[in-house]
Image 1 (cartoon, rainbow, N blue to C red):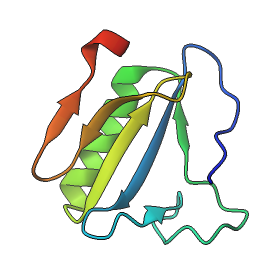
Image 2 (spheres, one colour):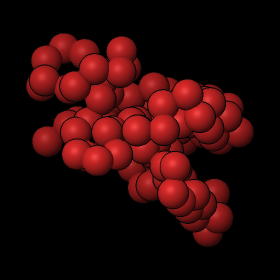
Image 3 (cartoon, rainbow, N blue to C red):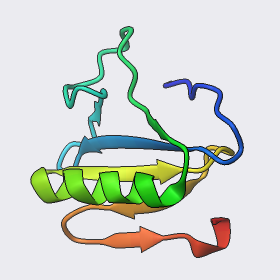
Length: 90
C-alpha cells in the first residue's frame, strides 16, 4: 500500500497511473517500485493541481491522473476517455 504524506488541509495530492494497466507511476513518470520515489505531486490549491493533471494527460494520453484532497478522497479523475469531478468534495 502506498502511504500518503501529510499535507495541510488546503493542499491536494496528484498521482498518475498507466491507463491500460493501472500501474502507478512515480513523480518521474516511471513505474512505482515500492522504493524511495514518491508517487504524489503536492499542490497548494485545486486549480493548479487540475491544470497540471490536464497538461500531463494532454501530453501522455496513455496515463490517467487523479487529484485527492487532504482527506485522501479522489476529487478529480482524468483520462483520454473521461473527466470526473467530485464537486461535492471541493
